[in-house]
Amino acid sequence: MNSLAPAARLGARLTWLWRHRQGFGEGSRADQPRILVDVSAIIRHDAQTGIQRVVRAVWSELQRRDGQGFQLIPVYATHSHGYCYAPVGFLDCRLEPRQAEPVRARAGDKFLGLDLSAHVMPKWRQQLRAWRKHGATVHLVVYDLLPILRPQWFNSKASAHFHDWFSVLAQEADQAICISKQVSRDLRDLLRKRAPRSTLSIVNMELSGDIANSRPSEGICQEVSDLLDRLRIRPAILMVGTIEPRKAYDTALAAFDYLWCERGGEAPDLVIIGKAGWKTKALQQRIRSHPEHKKRLHWLDGVTDEGLSRLYEACRGLFMASHGEGFGLPLAEAMVQRRYVLARDLPVFREQNLPNVLFFKDDRPDRLGEQLMHLTRVGPLSSSPNFAQRTWSHSVDVLLTNLAIQQTDATPTTVSQTAL
Image 1 (cartoon, rainbow, N blue to C red):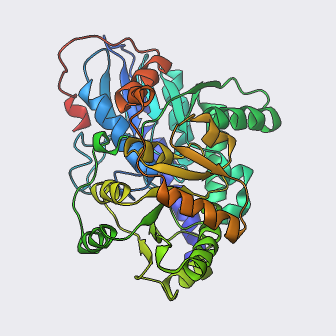
Image 2: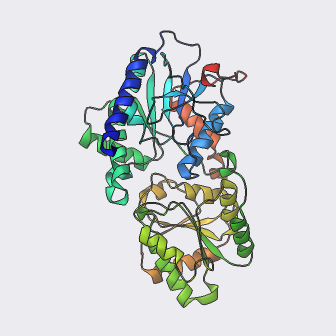
Image 3: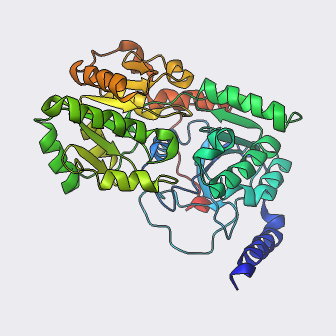
């Protein structure tokens, strides 16, 4: 029975596409272009990772400007149906099963693939093609290309989904909006090798680290509260990110083991904020069974944005040992909190040109341990006037320019009832 499930799901998708094939487009052009924002992942589950913070921040800033030169429409797809209108308040309400209405695109519409929905979007590429035939354009945000460039860091299913998504990007999209120059370079290289005939336009979008203006999730759980009490009298270094191979938590743990052994009570605590990920089962067990677990080693996997902000404030600095990133959002978040960062010397981190980042190249526990001790002592960063420009408002200014949308000062309008 299970062996027939994939064929049944494919049949259901094809049936949905056939049933709605005549309803994917409209002939008229509205006075204002519509931005059809893909929220397919976050509408189902906000995993509270960096990408979700970006999605919430950009959506909220776009919503604040709705009606000022464009109309904002949230859309989503699932495994069983293509892109349909989403409730405008999708961040505040639970998505209830209902008869979802397919999106009818028209000339001038801009589909913005803001959410990372590599597991869903490729299933509905025929719908994207239909929209483009009706005069809409497709713009996809590219957070990184690591599942293709470094497949050993990811599970096979995630890599397969991402390869399918890359095919959609190269063949069905009009524009790629990359979150760093490094991602842009990676994308150009991949297109030359895998899709040399692609006409995809590549632009960049700057990100902010301002958690307070990213529509943050709220609340402080007891575990975070207890930890904050401890950090009032104990120095600590923070790490933020999913427990997965590229994040190099094994390197960090080796360095802290060295410090706890050699430096005793003056060595800082290690605070890890991140979900349990893939290909790290042994490492996760090593953390949970570590003699310092819940003493000087703290792993919290369900922290709100409010809790994360408080921990940035409470810790002496941030440690970013990752072997690869599309941007490195925690570096920017630490900058907002005026905390120094010790980061692996990667071009994508250098690109941010942040005054709060110190770099390391040597993974040996003793060398890295000494740099972590220095990070513990440096204290908070003085404010940086240049960084004040890196707000989510500025990010959306750049985004709208990339989308060729001219903003107006008109009073925001109410979103169409078709999106409710």
